[in-house]
Length: 307
Ligand code: CP
Ligand code: NVA
Image 1 (spheres, protein in one colour):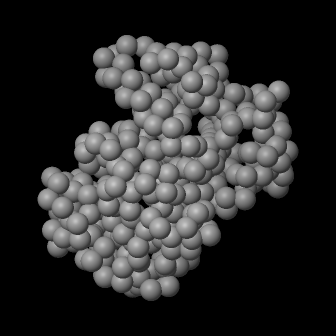
Image 2 (cartoon, rainbow, N blue to C red; image 1 turned 90 degrees about the vertical axis):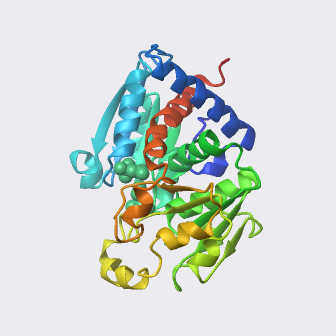
């Protein structure tokens, strides 16, 4: 038996593989829009393990798996023996004998790595404290759809250096673009935690206005990620000057788009005028989670197929 291929962080896949996924995403999305069934995963099963809340990831994986002809089983932590202390390694050994692919949303990256190490089938990271590779797959696909290749472009990341930020930074290395990062003091990028090879593809700015200058894409995320709720009051104070507003967007290129992985807090990390404004592509970005993950599921279960 070949060891299973996993998608635990963005850099687990080469640029060629990710570009192949974008081609498949386009093809799968086009068929979906024409209401043409495409069911390469008939009789296949996806298990989804959620240790944190979700709307988009849950719906896109479950709907996507159904549309591909398979089924998805949703396992919330509280409903499983995980919540009663069953070791993650044992859960992995058992689930992976019964299904064809697993998606997990959990806390530390080490948890998903332990699961993957004992799994017979591919494991997909549906968000950890460190990374959110499915999100950036959809985000880069969305950028390409709206503006063409991302190579050489500038992405401004404003706010917390969290899981989504870390994954943008990995993507910058894979696709060769630049990230301008602006975080409040004390929340700076940790290159090792982000899983970076170096510091060539990002630059840190004390002033978020400077980070936005000349950007082709401005993006942000919540100030308090899941699992960090105890820090919420302190973060509200620390991040107050890091709200993406019209003034920040005015520093970016006129053609710049705004993205947010959602859920958003209008009036905190983003002003209503921006997220609901003309430069925002957040609804396309959310929809593309579905199409990009269908391409990912197809690739992990079936391997490369001809378009
Ligand atoms: N962006 C994202 O992953 O959303 P959910 O938390 O709703 O899945
Ligand atoms: N950084 C956020 C992303 C939610 C999709 C979190 O981890 O809560």
